Length: 306
Image 1 (cartoon, rainbow, N blue to C red):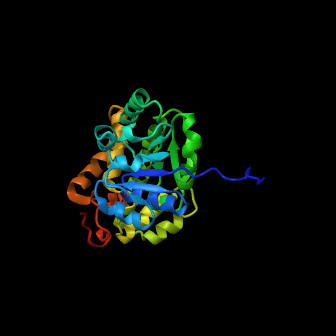
Image 2 (cartoon, rainbow, N blue to C red; image 1 turned 45 degrees about the vertical axis):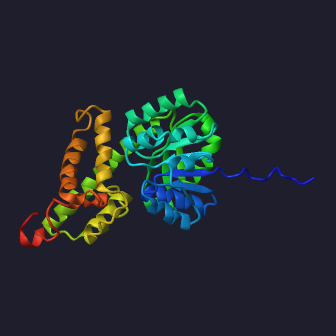
Image 3 (cartoon, helix red, strand yellow; image 1 turned 90 degrees about the vertical axis):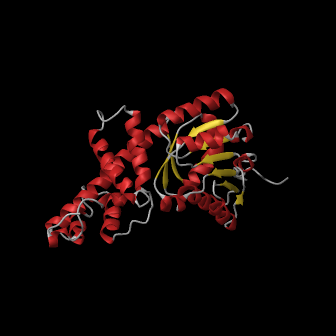
C-alpha cells in the first residue's frame, strides 16, 4: 500500500474579481505558484492578458466564482464591491464552504456592513476582510503584508493563498483588517508628505538629494518607503505603483471612520493639499507626485516657486 501521509493537500482554486494593477499582480503571483486562477474584470482587456499567462478569463463575475474555493475582490470602492457582489448577485453563485476575501480598501463601515449581510444571508460563505500593505512589486514577489481578519473556519482554506501573496497577519473579527489598513495608510501619507516637503526644502536651500540620501541612509530618520519615493521625486518618475488618488481615498476613509479632523488634524491637512493635486490632474500619478505644487527642482537656482 502506498504511503500518502506526506501528500500535500490540493491547492484551493481562486477567483479574482478586479484585474487592475493589484488584482492582476495577485493573479500573476498565484499562477506562478501553481494555483488555478479564474479572473473577471469590468473591461475585458486585463483578464484577456492574464489568460495568456494561464488564467481562465470570464465575461461575467458569477461565472468566475462558481467553482472557486477562494473568491478575491480587488475592486476600487465600496460601491463597486456592492454592485458586483450584491446588486449583480455574484454572491449567490459562491458555493457553500467557500471563502470570500475582500482585499481592496473600502473602509470600516462598508466592510462591517458586508460582513453582517454575508453572515445573515449567506452563512455558509466565510467573509474575510484582508486588505494589504504593499504595492504591485511586492505582490508579484510575494512580499505583501496581509491584514487578515475573519472567522477561524476560513483559515485552512484561505491561508495557502495568503501565504503565496505574502505574510498574513490575523487580527481578529472581520473589520479589524480594515481598521489597521487605515492606520497604516495614514502613517504612509505622513511619510510621503514628509519626503515631498523635505525634497522641496532641499531644492530651495540648494542641498543635493544625493547628499541628503547619504546623510540619512542607515540612520533612524528615513524609512525604505521614504527613500524610494524620494528617488522617484528626484528623477521625476511618477509612474504609478500606488496612485495619489487612491492614497487620498484612503485618507478620506480614515477621516470618515474618525468623524473628522479632531483625531488627525495633520492628516486632514495633507488630504486637502492632495485633493488640490488630484483636482489639478495628478491623481493617476504615483503617490510620490505629492512633490508637485511645492516648488520646482530649480527653485534654489532661480528663486521662484511653482
